[in-house]
Amino acid sequence: MRFFLGTLRRTVAVGAAAVAALALTATAAVADDPTPRPGVVGGTAAQQGEFPWMVRLSMGCGGSLYTQQIVLTAAHCVNGSGANTSITATAGVADLSSSQAIKVKSTQVIQAPGYNGSGKDWALIKLAKPVNLPTLKTADTPAYNNGTFTIAGWGADREGGAQQRQLLKATVPFVDDAACQQAYGNLIPDEEICAGYLTQGGVDTCQGDSGGPMFRKDGAGAWIQVGIVSWGQGCARPQYPGVYTEVSTFAADIKSAAASLGG
Ligand code: ARG
Image (tube, rainbow, N blue to C red; front, top):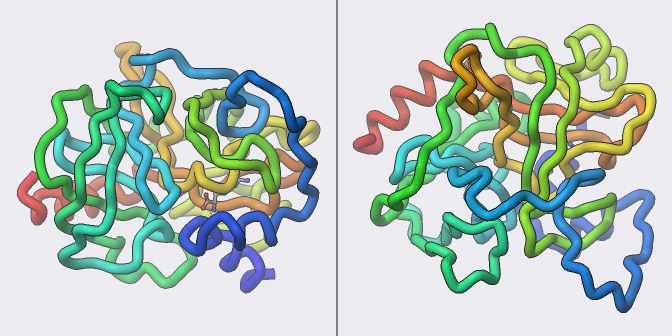
């Protein structure tokens, strides 16, 4: 079980073919549907500018602007730490094909120290230059690890589905550690936070959404990031909520890693 889920966690890094191969209940897309189908399972299209700190990464992951020059993403989306000019971040657009897209290359990556495929699923990517866009605040206490969360991404809109051109959003309720542990057996409760409709399923992040933020409003009505898309068994299945990196647990580590990248 642990090996299987660990494999699922890393599917995005190995590309679309492997993602498709791992899709356990893939449904064929309607061949001539002219409507661009947005990503995330059970979502709707996000508006241009609605989540201005959302970033798409060229290896097929999501991310969020931690600063104007640092993207917060998942550890399983990157290969390790060090100089890295191979990643392109696309920012400032809901439609990835928009002529307004801002594309910036990476210069350095920090993968969570001690990351070994379980837990600690965070990483920072430094961009070659700052982008003039709003950043997303990250939770540094557990105060917001409850309630209803928003998820967004350009990943698959169903298990085995294609990556999406249009950013999709959805909301999912918090699932407590006991219920999530009951579903998976290998949750790391201090490092992971779960969300989804436990009984019905139907709404979730999916392959290609990894690294993107799960967020909610804080006490002042501002968006705050509480999770990073990490893993799940399939997508949107009843009894299998989405598992997210618990951002508040790693807030201090993320902050010092960002400082080491020069902010
Ligand atoms: N590991 C996947 C990725 O790399 C994310 C899967 C999220 N799955 C879920 N059921 N919430 O894109």
